[in-house]
Length: 220
Image (tube, rainbow, N blue to C red; front, side):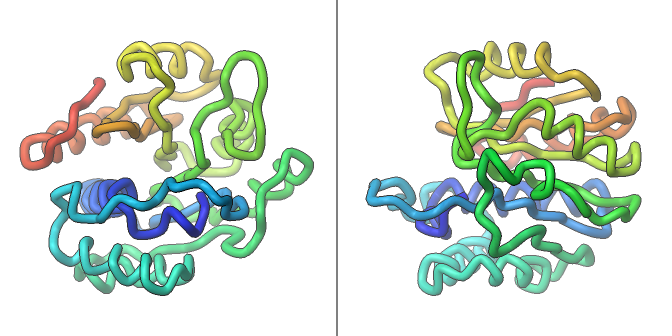
């Protein structure tokens, strides 16, 4: 995540979807792992939040994020939507690097009923090389080792010039542990992962329900 992305249309989808998913899973905590990287001079993050038809509370939330560029504002999400879960920001001010990965992903909250949002700039590591903009498959292993079996890890994946269903199949094949499902819109996908097959079935059910009201597609 870069602060320059805060409040754009992808953020609108991200927060609308995860607010919905946390409610559907009755999660006590939405644990956001931002994988913060420095802003650059690119033009990413310029699309308005209204491009994704999120609930009006999310649009207002995204507009505030864009105005203040403060990642700490993310903790106010459940108050905006009158939800019962709480938001935890893991390493909210620490930039992730290839050197501090193991330390960065350590010390995750041990709560049973929680949803994790892992938010790299690009998504899963490609076959040949990786950077701080990617989540590694070994990172996923480390995360799942720390959390209870019922926890769900949702990972951001940007479009990689291949159909999302084929990209998801490759991601699923490379995952060393857990079960997975996915939902996508426009140029971004969220891959849900859990050690519990039953919990992933709950995520898939929630995704289907979400797709009935939003312009997203699902991958069981």
